[in-house]
Amino acid sequence: MLDVHSFGVLHDLSVFVSIATALAVVSYWLLRHARPEVSWNHEGSVLSRPYGAPDLLVLAGLGLVFILSMQPQGAGSSDGGGAVSDSSLIIGMVFHLTVCAGILLYLFQVRSLNPAELFGLQHLHWRSLAVTLGIFTVIILISVNVVSAITVTWLQNFWPDLNPQETVKAFQESDSTGLKILVIFLAVVIAPLAEETLFRGFVYGVLKRYTDAPFAALSSSLMFAIIHMHVGSLLPLWMLAVLFCLAYEITGCLLVPMLLHSVFNSVSILAMIFGDKT
Image (cartoon, rainbow, N blue to C red; front, side, top):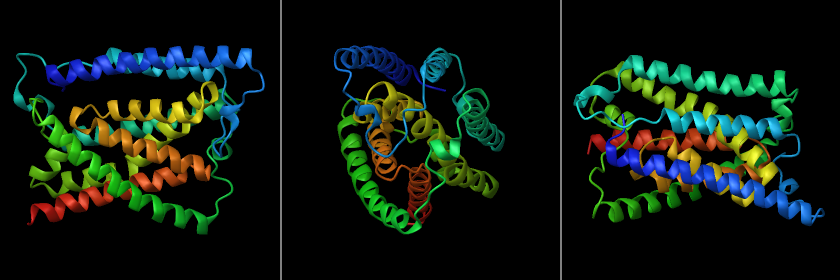
């Protein structure tokens, strides 16, 4: 659970992003009403035209549910109240897969959209895919680690708690092989699949439809960072997600950010494993 300081920052930031996004949607609508020839939301390789008002309402509903579900750690709670266990990881996997399945079923059954076509999965060009993955992997590893180092240096002067995320901490400190396997599977397979479907596939696509690609990338990436519920990781995760959006927009294929997400998490896990041995 969140400590009171993290809760305050993340809750206020969530409200700010929600209000800013709502105002942006209205502002872009007024701009397009005044200039019908403007079509920034249809530029690039990611499809946004198929999305509609129902999808915007679903996105707003998801955001509202998230904000209302945020809770600070109770003053009388024990230190182990938020401990990561095998059961909590399994519940996390089920939750991720449920969200992913829910988005796909909503798009296919309710909106009559083909997710494979919508997310650019029908026409894969494996050679260009490999080149893009290689280039973006290098860019991501360098830029995110630089931003992370700068963030830690900046926060350590005033932030009360710079401990890693609970899952990372559990992986580093646990002697359980089973727990470590679950963390690896969640980080390398489940999270990239579910989070990219939600944030790049759905959130970014819907916001691009009603604003434009740059704003959609910045806003959806901040949402992605906030939902990880860790103040120290906000800026690095925001940078990571922006780069995922850029790779998605360049290729038009959601598989690209999925694979980049998986590679990034894999490298992070390897760094923890070999870091513990030094």
